[in-house]
Length: 75
Image 1 (cartoon, rainbow, N blue to C red):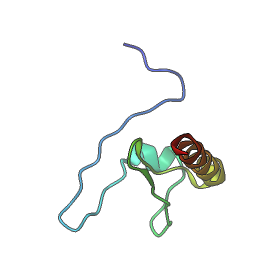
Image 2 (cartoon, helix red, strand yellow):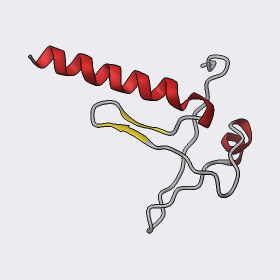
Image 3 (spheres, rainbow, N blue to C red):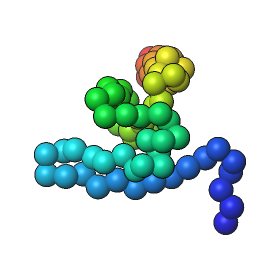
Image 4 (cartoon, rainbow, N blue to C red):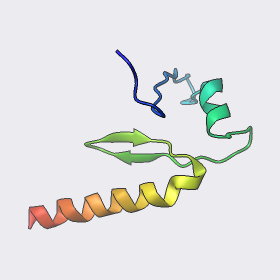
């Protein structure tokens, strides 16, 4: 099975203190360095995401738009 260009998947282990290690290939690809702060986004139905710093606004808008659509469907 071939992966689509530009798409990646990694695994990480959560330690006893809740810390995860971001794989080196991912850190290099997304220019993540020690001391950088990351945003972790979560949706109970869709899971978690750790977006690259540059695309945070796009991800946040998508999440909040989905939330608004879900609320409108409930009413």
